[in-house]
Image 1 (cartoon, rainbow, N blue to C red):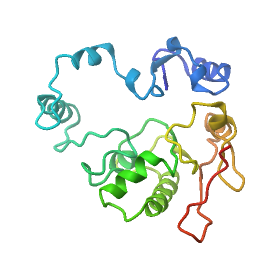
Image 2: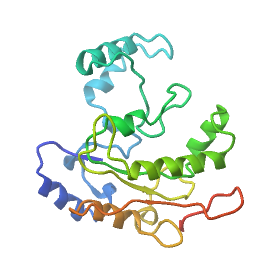
Image 3: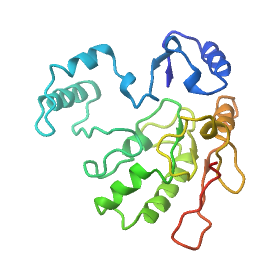
Image 4: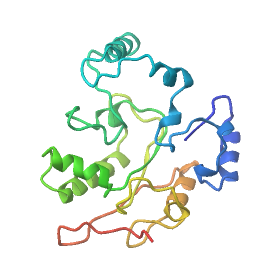
Length: 225
């Protein structure tokens, strides 16, 4: 979730403290974009209304031509690859699904991604981009560790990103208090709540990515009661 424009940094911090750092406790008046509601509230009412008159064809949609023209006009880019999100993207469309993440996101961000996200590993295996789910988990681990240590590429990060990546086999983590206040990487790590709170302070805190300690193909699980 992103806080509403116009509110000061101190007001946004106060709102987060008041919500006990659980974004589900924030009120709509404290937000501009509700990313937790599967992204649906991240769109303006004008954008939602536009869907009713737009061309929603999967291929050859004139809306895509409008998007390309706008990106070229505003950003000067020749090629456009729309993605569902910055990390996972759609590997069957974009050859490099991390290019945007490592090169063009300058807004400070805290990334939570489950290494064992069941909606992600199946996709990479189904499209034969990786030989197995285990290979995906190991590759994602290396990618997230690299991100946590990265200074940014073409557009350097203003604030180093922080990464929290357990292995809980959950696509959504904050539907319950357990995912926010109890889950942590193994053998001993910090909770989502504690890592996020530390990220808000000047020191920025640290990133935590679940390592694989198992000699078998099964990835080491995090603590996810």
